[in-house]
Image (cartoon, rainbow, N blue to C red; front, side, top):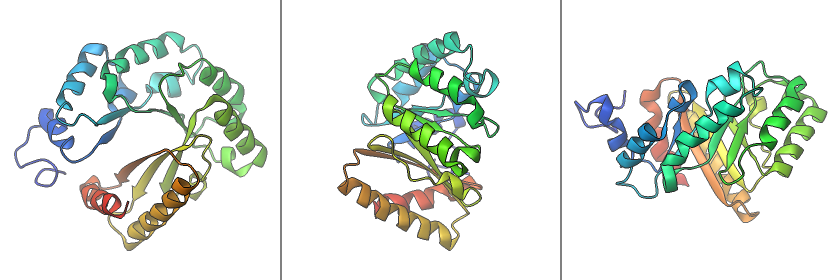
Length: 233
């Protein structure tokens, strides 16, 4: 969908990353969700981004860890995941751990035990999706207090169908926002404007970094809204 926009016409898929890094300074790396990659493959991706020294890869935790093992008995897999992504070197950004829609607050003990044993030298952001994490005050308070204590960030998902996930809690002075637009509807621009103002307020209150990732149900429209976000910020 980005041929002729971000990627010059006739660009081969194998060369998309070479072009991507000319336009953006980070990527929410979904490939690591479907497969645990070793240092050799990760190193090749890092080399492709060398043209933009400030570029950061933000790799998602493997679904085998988060959705299949559900964070239990996942120590060896987690070690393999970290061994691979560390090959990004200086171009490694924060890590993104997303648990499934059916991962409920009943699993809080397992979640806490897993997070407590993660390495602390690479920032991690957690995204929860089950509604009871947000709708029950006791669950919400326990979650965000734990994240604050462990210095783990909270992903904020802004999707029109899940207003509960736009929670506005920052357990660390870092924001990780996943914005899901609606094909450049006028409300997309209004929501971006609101985010720019919120980020400005947070910056005045001590926010140290913001990671803003654009998604669209039809990804052909993402570059236009990305341009708007960058200009407004």
